Length: 326
Image 1 (spheres, helix red, strand yellow):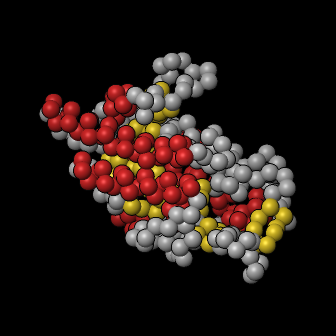
Image 2: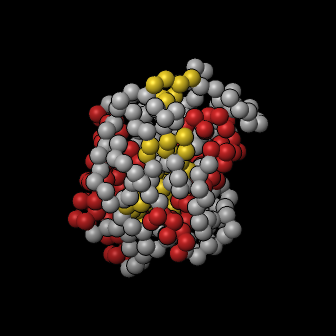
Image 3: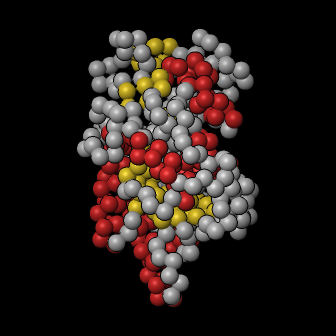
């Protein structure tokens, strides 16, 4: 994957996380000035390891502003996720970090704009893309468009919704343009393929179906984000997924991973299907600078999602190289 040579530097906050790991792999030969941020120095890396900017965005706003200086875009992936390094259950303090990190990103962008205005550089504020989540929709019936009222149920979804509201309000005060990316399930770092273990159990509804979710493959996600970073006009809110909804049971079957099934509880959500009409239109309208950037989004299928996850070694070690059926 290659970025055009005219593209300015890109700062990726939270680059040590799961999405960041995908991007570091897929963008390794992108030919761009990629500034990867993390809070601690990578194991075995030198203090000035190429590309890494090691600082805490909340504790060191000066370092954040310095890393953002001269960038064309900032992609904020930072924030704890359930089941990640922060643990399965996040505290109220951890959840609040999503809002605080987004606001810190906005303040850094405003400082960059002010500094460059003073020097006559004229490049203005960097493009701001803030990672949100499909969890903000809760149990609302789909397809879920970006304009429907939010109804998050889980604490993580509530935290992301609060982040969105705070970021939109502060961006309006600062005169900044932002794009909130409501990302669906990512194959291989989700709770199903990525969280599978021996004895895994799925909910099963009265129609025999397992939960269905909007998904995107990890390679496809990297391609979509690369395209959006280059897009001159982004909407304030954008769903990120491939068209359709995929049954979790189909994913495990395609990966050759066994699972049990149990009757779904009353509060279980049968389907979360994102409306990606807006994303499809954006991709179709953009010039395609390289063959590996998508002009369209393929419909999500269990087989393709598993193949993308397997290619990046994101499947559990128990998953065989060849698909089997259960």
